[in-house]
Length: 530
Image (cartoon, rainbow, N blue to C red; front, side, top):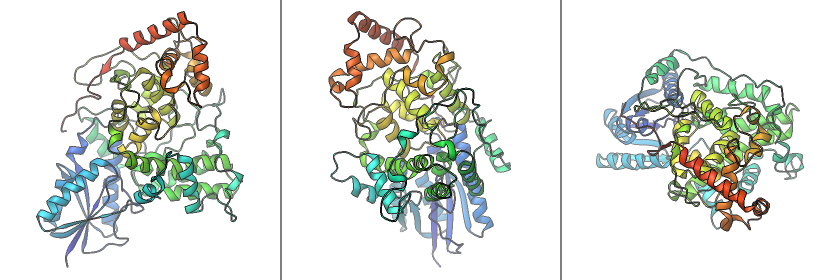
């Protein structure tokens, strides 16, 4: 009987997502690969590597225990590993999931050439980790002048019957409850603990393996994410019960030292394939229908998965390959070294140390990424991306940091988020205006500013919040492009009301701040082939 090789990508780490037979078959070998080329392509966060490697090894072990034929191999690249395994197992055919990001598309194209040279074939199947196919999104996007998430989200709600009533109207009488979900965290209320799944023997072995790899970032010591399907499901259930009821009102809140607050941390688990997006959506909806969760919280969470996650993946393919180099604002600065070393610590082989970052909001959110491999979306958008955009960081440089540094980041999700939503590098394909803000927004939504070395109420002078200085300089620099924008017009009314001497001082101080920064001109620490 001819053998079929079923290649499972690193982000398909459960049978809920992987394109493999539902039951073991003697004529199918399931192949999992560690690619040396991919593993050394960026200075990946060590916890991201542990999550991927441990999830893959747990999947391999569970499949073997269930009776599957499994091959777990290390290879120079995915393409070479697939071709070599096809020879090893005398496979006439290889089945794989379509590439989730461009690099895997390229690798599968290379694998096809190697296989066909040897008389073998490659069959690609749709990605089971999403609820809309690439063609479905392309059909929706075709011919539209604007590609706003809200309208795609409504179509997904109708398609899957989520938060919909029998008469075709949205549950609760409206599609979106975002206006109800903008409260700061209550003063004096402790932040929830950071959840942990204690690492088992497989995970601990991967932690020790990755700990000493050179030119990677972050520490493995606080790794605590699920790496099995069972633990991922338990994590989802705990979120639904403990955090979802209050998730909505506080989903935009920022608190010093708290990477999650009431967020689920499910993106890392979803994006590695331990959960299916529809099961997350259905459980949230069921909790609302059972009266356990307010509709604003349920809808806000569902919108992140059924709306934003599906939309952002569709926009990635819609805007590629130009998205990798998009730079509508002509930002040209490299990434400040603070993004790798918020405390001024040495982070690469040079041993260079710098002055620590004194902006409490930026330093703390980057420490959270360094220590946990994550921070929630408002810290990413309104602190990290906001400040990088105001400094003038090239979108590609910021994108590579996000891709490397976050446990949930893959190019398909981080690139459109960073280049589109985060920096307006795509010129408005995702967001109609740049998501920039002064220190007033950060002060309103967080507890950072009260204990910061800078004064959030000042926009000039040695104690002025740099976010204020950079924000007003950004607006002054881009008046020609945005002054008549309907969503930004009021901001430019304020610019016009700034006296000329103060505006000159703002612009001079902003330039001096940028010039004083230490930059990483290579985008990231150098990478070896460990």
